[in-house]
Image (cartoon, rainbow, N blue to C red):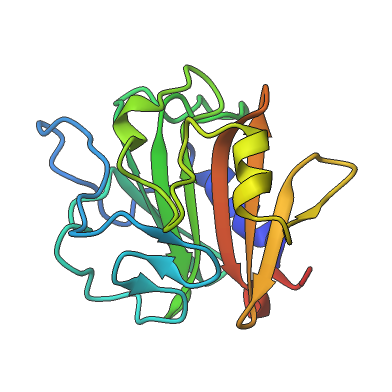
Length: 187
């Protein structure tokens, strides 16, 4: 199932939009009341396992929504050119993605694969202060029980039937992925 979740993220650039924000409005990240990223739980008041719709205040107007094999997802970004051309990978600049079937099954928050932008994510942090300018050393000090994946260099936390994966680029936090183990299946 993780392949489906990753495929949904990759599909963002080529899928037929299910619903998109006003074409005239500049793209922007969601603005929930709280941007606290609670590993294995959710972001602010949006929890893993919560109903996908209606979207709560602050999570309206995604840049693009798509569907793949019954899994629905929406992405918010700061750039109109964020999504790669068909056949290419890597979202430019920061983005937030929420996905699931009838319930929230995953989140991805990233400073981007290309043209990394940490400034727009400066308020998006874990309760113990780990954010998108945090170093690997700071992360390990904050989450000493995180398990390192030797093949990818990412770190994971498992709890409450959920998994959170922290991905680093040049020893700086780049991406946080959070999934229910039901959807992820690699828990």
